[in-house]
Length: 110
Image 1 (cartoon, rainbow, N blue to C red):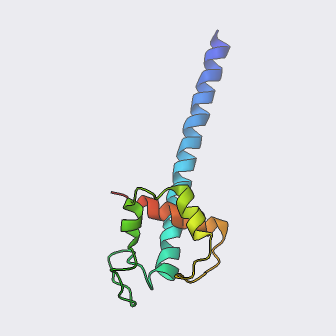
Image 2: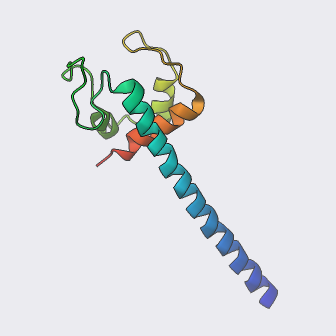
C-alpha cells in the first residue's frame, strides 16, 4: 500500500513540475511573439497602442481587436499566419514564429 501511495506522490510531483515547465514555455513564446509582432507587424497593425505609420487603423484591425474576435482561436491564427494573403506582406514566418505570434495575440484577450 505504501508503494502505491509513493508512486502516486511521485506522479503528482511530476505532473506539477511539467505544468510549471509548460506554463513558463508559453509565457516565453508569447514574449517572443510580441517581439516578432513589434518588428514585423507594427508597420500596419496597432500592437501596443501606438498607431502605425500606415495610419489605416479603420481598415486594419489591431492585435487586441483580433484577439477579441469570436473566430480567433489557436488554429485559426496559425492557419491565417501560415497562408499568404494579397493584402498582407508575406514574411515567411517559421512554424515556431507563427506559434509565438499566435500565443501573443491570444494573450491580449480581455
